[in-house]
Each structure stands twice: as structure tokens, then as C-alpha cells.
Image (cartoon, rainbow, N blue to C red; front, top):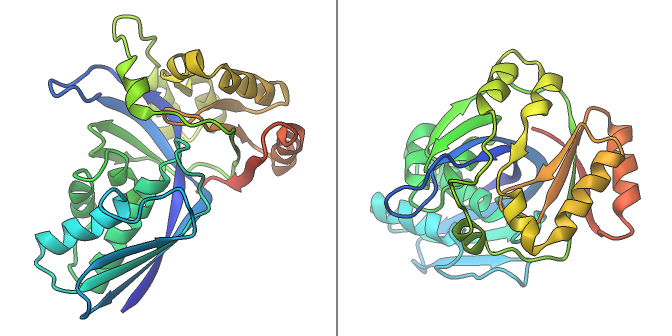
Length: 283
């Protein structure tokens, strides 16, 4: 049986971390949304051979146990004692190592596909619990809807759908090490966000007011190593973005606009020094 799943990119409308757990991992307090920049993941099961194989159109991704999509298939197959072999084909469109959760979204797509193929009848919340064993962004990517995400990434509160907004997603030729950035966090000096006000306005569906409270507390840490991220963000603001900020630990910067024409204007203006630029709708 063959199933193809869409695996959208995620954007952090807000990213905060109140504390560090005893195991050293951050506690998250984030508002996340998905964008219509997506990978497409085709999952096929078969009797022989009984191995897991991953194929991608990207030369930058591992196709073994290091790949999150491979891990997703292995975990679900082991947990439910399924004997089938699994072949995963990933058509990459989300930039790799960009802070957009492409690998996590691919893994979530594999979980959804195999849940359907093997008729496991797991709810999205049950899949999300399994997803946390793969990576902290995978539970959110099970849903791909505007949500408040807390804890290790497993606590997900879905929020009212946002109006029809556009995002300009731009990745410069920079590679950011997430573990390196997370090690830089000094919780005594971190300037936390007002996520309470952001959530209150999102629940009232006052998107324009909500943009005032969006942000990413990791921006100063990443920009210390890569100041060009800050320059790109400022350029987007100068060009009229409703909000511009870094997603995840970077290096991708995105701008949110309430009109397509404004988004296209920003795209055309930054293409000269940043070729990997996409204009997409928020999902």
C-alpha cells in the first residue's frame, strides 16, 4: 500500500524558554504555525524485503537511522510489532537545517501515513505522544495547525485559525548548530516574551494586535554568531513587513504580511543577496 503525505514547514511566531529541565533540555513556550512550503513524503509498505529504506532528492540528508523519517518508521513498526518493510521517498522543498522543522515534519508525515496503512487507528494526540520520542518539534508537526506548544514540545493547545496572511521565508547560506545555540542560553539574562498577551489576542482572533507580541528569545544568541540574520530581519521590517523574525534557532528569517503584494515586494527586494526566498500562505 502507498500513501503520500504533505509535510509543511513550521514557523515560530513566538519562541521562549522559561527554564532548563534537570536533563539539560529546554522547557519550551512557543506559538507555532505551518506554512505552505512543504516536502512530500510517500510511504510504501511491502512484505519483502522487511527493511526500512529512505530516499530523498537532497544530497544533504542521511538515509539511515540518523534520518528522523527513518526513526519514525522504526519506532512505530517496533511498538506495534508490524513485520512489513517500509520504503520512504521524500521530495524535499523545505530548506535543510533552516529552523523550519523539515525533518520533524517528514517524520510526522511518516507516522500519519503508517497509522493509515497499518490501520492502527491512533488519534492525533496518541501519535503526538509517540512523536516526542523522535524530536521535540515532531508532536506539533502531527497537527500542522496554529498552536501553543509547551513542555518538551508534547503539550499542544490548538488555537483559532488565523486570517489569510502571507509569509516571506528567506534562508541565507548559513548553517546553524542548534545544540551550540541552546548551550549559549543564560536564563538569568534571557528577555522573555509576553506570550500571555499574544495568546489572548490570538484567541480573540485579533491577528494585527497579536503581531506586537511575536518574537524569538534565541535571536540575540544566534545573531551573535551570524549578524547577517539581523540585517535581513531589519531589511524586511523596512520594506513593510507586519512582523519579521527568526524561526527556531535559525538561520531562516520570515516576514508576515497581510497582502500578497507586500510579500512579493519584500521577496523581490531581498533576492539580490538571498536567493532561497519563498512567498507562501500560512496554513
